[in-house]
Length: 502
Image 1 (tube, rainbow, N blue to C red):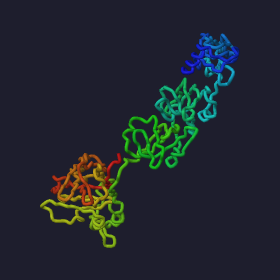
Image 2 (image 1 turned 90 degrees about the vertical axis):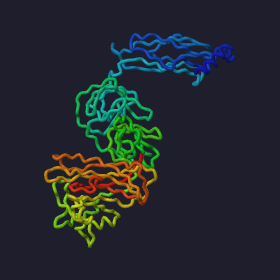
Image 3 (image 1 turned 30 degrees about the horizontal axis):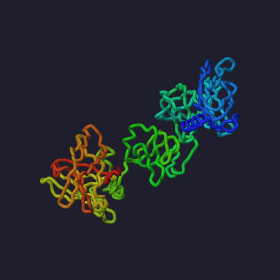
């Protein structure tokens, strides 16, 4: 605009004009594109009109200007408005175009004149579902809407049937489950999605049930998904820095208004749900509602849950194998060598899968075979008895990438004694490559005498260890209990060797 004004000024200085001095202007500009006035008692405002010849004005009936015409050069124009009243009281806000024009459509300067008023005079009271059908910029009242989620700049509301949702821009202090009455204006955002800007928000009740339906899963159609409403949707993928990446998809999901605690899920697979907030390629935007942690994203090299031992557990030794940890009671434990299927014992089956059961015993104890001092329950293993200790060496693990941050995770529990005291069992993980060994401590179980047995989650980072197909990993009693004359018994289940993906 400034460049054009300079050109016009140069033209005026050199008296450039049509041969006919009374011709209409081919270029008209105004110093402002919009003006705003108070509803009553408004002070007049002055704008400057620039033209290369004559101009006239098209003036709405509630606006007056002086002068109403002009000629080449610059003209200061005074703009005034009459009071915006109806039946003696303030009327709705109004706006109209004040046009300064020359001889073509292109030679027009349009000034939008706004006058304040009572925005909510004669406004309709509508439901959330009806908001989408209203004209843009309409002023409305909404009653008994329920807050279903909070956002960085407001909150999301729905009707009691939870079929329609809309974003409210407001700094009002509300909480999920509040019912609210509002005075607001419907607007459209950059994604052509409706939202409302609230001038007044009143909480009428709190702690109402938010009975959301199941979110529509768009994971498989994220790249083609579109909606003209803020639908309740969900997506599964890898979470990082408030973004969900879906394998094979061009678009990722930007989670808006995510709480700070979601940072703890970086590097996890998640299922997040919320309210569609448009697409700004390469992301689809989602206003956060809730998240389900689907577990850490991992490269898994080995897993074992011992469920395949169920047939041997069921045979038992006159009774099926028990579950001491779950029942917190001494339950039937089978020597691994005892139950057999087609002549193959549970111990044989483990060895055939590549496991090794290392054993030691106190010098005062008679020799036992590995399958006689290691036991089977449903479906996990029990190690040792008084004066005897045993452990488990995993099968050879291949394809561990060089330099990988390898972890071993498993669940374990000590056994209890007759007095209720838990065996003071401590464990280690041994990583062995030929004659080289690295030993990693497992945290003590910490289960008190009066506490019930429980599974303890162990996760040990095997820092500094190297891995190839000849590497063997063993879980066993710590060196000061290898061997030991006392009871240092323990249970083992759900082993995993992995490295985090992030």
